[in-house]
Every structure is written in structure tokens, then in C-alpha cells.
Length: 282
Image (cartoon, rainbow, N blue to C red; front, side, top):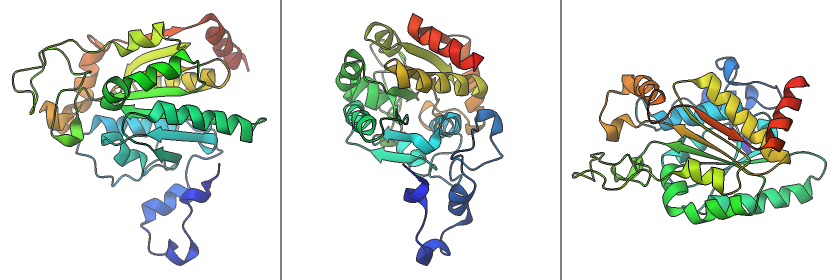
């Protein structure tokens, strides 16, 4: 993979906005950058169409900045709020039919292992709660059962944000939403626990209120998936539009969740732990 897919043809280059040109000229490719380096490189077009204060767009931005090898990474997404930011990042990105992202990612990972046997190619699913926990739960679980070497990242805003505010399987029990006026009547789907029991060798639950920790777990998840097996990261990305709080309060809402329902949690297999320890020594 290369920057060729985001490099404009000479005939069109002069008409593109400077932000897009910066993705090509000052992107993260091959530079060994991370979340702590945000502001020194261009990882996303900032004039994206997300709502003000969108937790998902922040989550996507932090994940894009945390990729250990963006030049060798393929992001697989699906329709939803996450698509709008992902389509404007400086990474290789493939959009799929809603919910089948883990099946597509599995095939792409196998293909890349054959095509590039001597060079790691990271395949990362980056999708909202609807795509992973609802429509795509079966294909997500089966990719874990098969021990596919891919990383699955959920940007969890606990709602179907781009279609009016319906409840999702990840909405909190009792939560009143624009299209769930009586409140959700069943608990949040325990996807994090399912990841533990379904074959993931590493998993972490974080929020956008702690960018450094988020970057660390994303990097660990991707490095472990290269060699050991499937990994999972669940990121709380609150939605001010449908949860009806001020866009300026997104980080405060995420920070409050860290003290309760979204307290940091991490698990790993012995093989994953050994690999992480080895990478730290190196």
C-alpha cells in the first residue's frame, strides 16, 4: 500500500483545498508518529461534516494518529457516523456494506499476508456500535472464533447517531433518545465480555477523555494482532446531538463515564503479554 491513493493527479491538485494537500505532504506515513505528536502532522481534514463536539470524529482522529504503521494499514469501515471522518483521513480506507466489515477485513488480511509475506500489513476494523454490536455481531464474533489476525475497534456513541437517534444494542438501559421516547428496555450488549470469551487475545475499554491511554491501547492491539490473533478496543465516543448535551461538554461526559460505566479495563493472553513486554524492551 502507498500514498498513491490519496495523491491527486497534477491536473486537479491546484483545485484541492490546502488541508487535503497537507494530508499528502505532511501526513503520518513512515514517520513513527503517535498521539503525543498531534499538531505536528496532518491526520485528518478538519473541516469534516460531523456535528460540533462529535465524540466519534475525535475517536477516529485519535485512532488514526495512534496507528503504529499508517503506511501499511488498511482501515475497514461501514456506513455510519464513523464513515465521514474515515473518508477524510490520510490512511488506506475501504467502506463495506453495513455490518459485514469483519468478514471483509478477514479476507483482506489473508490476501495481504499472501501478497506481502515478508512485511506486516495491519487490517483494522473501525466501526460504530451499530455495525459491530447489532447488524454485524455475528460476523464480528466469527472473525474472533476463527482467530483472524485483525484489530476490531468500536467507536461507541451508544446510539444510531446519523439516522435520527434510535437506540442501539450499546445504548444504556433506560436511556431516553429521540427515537426511543420511553427509554431502552434492555441492558447494554456486553461486547467487551464477548471479546474475552470468543477468542480475542487482547482487549481494552477506554474513552476519548484520555487520548494518551487510547493511543497506547490501539498501538498494543494492532501490534498483538500482527502476530498472535484477534484484538478488540472499545472506545466511548459520546454524541452531543442525540444525547442532548452541549458540544463543549463532550470530554466532560467521557471523563465522567471513566469513573463509572466506562472505567478503564484491559485483558490479554500470556502470549500477547509476552509480545508487549518484548516490544517495550526493544
